[in-house]
Length: 614
Image (cartoon, rainbow, N blue to C red; front, side):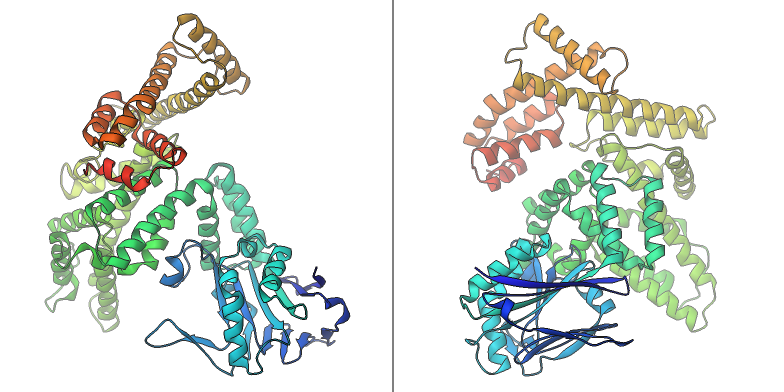
């Protein structure tokens, strides 16, 4: 059994360190010394190796390297991103990849120094590890030592959950076990950014409560960031990492990532994969998954733009034509943006978002750069004003699209007066461009979306009608807000009721067909909901009857129809049931996934059936 010695301390109250030396005879070794004074350093050493912690950063020499848990959305080699079990970043001193192959080359130059800011910028924002090894079995030359180290423990360090869990005991056991040398010593150094840790833990605690941060709590996060001087980039990567690690987010995001990686490998995307990506994006809105998680994947896999095929879409060609005419040509530029061109660009943005085509954003970025260069070179300021006008329309589009999609697909979304007033202003701006444009951009196709549920449809139609009536002075903002919040309250009660009734039927009521059973069930659930202050008064008969009917339909689908659909690959029967049952597609698809996992069936077969492929 190995023994270890641990040293713990702080540097200027901003960074915390743990230094550990582990091995069978670690307690018999002298392994560190400390210099005093303003430039005090703490030096750890073994023959040929050293690791020094100073006021500004670290210095190292000899073998070893650093590792940390990958933060979601940061730069990650495609080779690591493509392997679901690779979860940690590993850097080995003096190692670099060859020009034409993935093979590593090792040099004698393994020494160096790194400042604390760089450590937590390039690695994990909160915790990073450094290490070196001492073993009489290692080769004498540094390159050979590093190569031996990578072959022996590199795979484990890149895959060990102990790194993210900060479980040093397990990590030490894994490394020493792989070395298999009773004389080996493992020197492990853990560096913690205490400011980032406070921000990370606070955000995680708040976000995991309900997957949203109330205004008051966000002010607390802002205060922490200001007090510690945490820059916006670090705040963003911390928030994205926390949001990704929420279990409800992770499964959907990982599936999206895996599809993109497979497409990247082949250099093409099939219709089935495209349908699956579209479904996951829609499902993400329903589950309150931030779009930033998908943007991070898209950014990491930028080459997916080539997957759409060699021919450029018409809307992309039209975007190029409009922007080149407005900003990239040599003719005189007018400050007023042509309405027809603005409408074309808005529809192009809509299509690009639906197709996940990043070419549109790249063209826009190129146009922005060209506009800046022309202004710098003396062009009339009206050029910038014209471009800013288009960007304003795009910002209005993004805000409106997000709000309407949340109302349509997200359960119990918080509707505020600010949201309604923003939609009123945006609707007026789009209608000013062209009468009916608001409906064309945001309503056309939405009401035909198969994933749009009953309450989502009610909220969208109520919103659209309410905005029109407000413009005609036949309705107030407060009245529309009350209508939307009323639908939201009923939806919340319906969701809670379904979960409660389903649970009680599963555990207590094997039969619930008789009126007496249903009345007893209703009384028990009503008492429970009133006790939990979810309900005042009685459960509406209509809602309770709909709940019972929904559970019966689910049972018929799972026990009678789904086995037939799988055996016969009968997509038409599945679609017929979904169209006529009125059940929520999101929930039915979750039932299907659970059925396939429980019965150890191939999920690829389910995707094929959903797509209607035989």
